[in-house]
Length: 493
Image 1 (cartoon, rainbow, N blue to C red):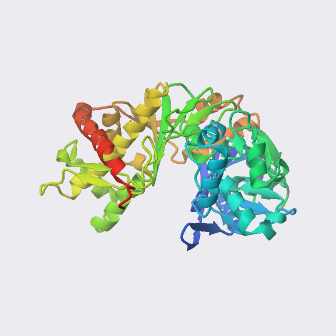
Image 2: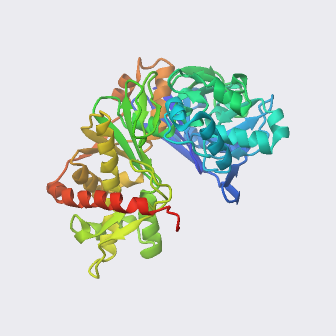
């Protein structure tokens, strides 16, 4: 039996999972960390914590699997994008990591957008706008505010690059981590020299580019729980790995993840831009492939917030039962779930949540169901945007915590009027990374054959009789969005 390890470097924790060549998860480990927020818009973490946490999670996963470290054929590292780590010539971090949530570089982001132009940056990166959380403006901020450290910085790394360096002693990165860096050109698979010059850095200060699934280096003997000689494969961002780990290697399938946030991932075999700038473009899990990645800041966290604040913290099973007792459409109660802003398909960072049509007859179960329906409406809105881009969608693969709710799955299937499937493996992101590692070490000829062997469907939810009941509520949801979204962020707010 061959084993592969997928490592997911998340925002608040790292998860390691070991899989065999049939896709069975043999062991999993999780180590959490707490981000530092010393001031508004500042989010940091000691880079050494990432390394210690990764080692701990890997050790736990291997131990739970009951195998020797030498039994691991390959490792692939996925996770968050945009978190920036600056190291000296010896690979030692010069300061705390600037986490992707950090927005200190607002002035620099505005300056770079004015210098290069929003359209040119869109073509370069596939990102619909220049944001202060992207690494390019962060580097410009670093240059101006910490010049002594800037002068001695040898490499600028993402979290995944830093962990790979500690495992292998080599500096490399997956191109699939870089579209939102804003110094990488998705058209040419190369660093953008004009942007680097504007930031005051050189290509030598960035890691070597590798394609997704490429065998990039081997581990060295050090204090890690991984055996020397283990292959390290390049892997793209977490949502793209989750798309692969859920089995979306064929035409007509897209993945949706309803965790704290909502994210969809639709693959294309060529570069594609949304000219309306609703959807961002990223690199896919196969070389030369791309994905459109619409997302929303709030989804599952809205249901959790309502449960915790307004229901005494009852368990989700009871919460589901109360929502299930309410008829489809929540007796006219419609919510807009934009409690932390709207991103796609309509963008307004100032947007906030709305409850429309409240009557004295509406109870807690109505609000619970209306929240689930609102996320399904938002999902459908983004599915329609993907269809307008030529995406043929016949099935949705559902990931994230919400996929455990049979009611929520049925609501999505009814609203979308599409089958919604869930795979056996709950750790699709780690499995996607492990699949790339299995291909990189030559155990499968390509991702499609690896998916066929390693991904299994657990359940399939077909649209039911309620599908027709959601046509008019969804139309009303769209009307409310069109009417109310522009009212947020006005001069009087």
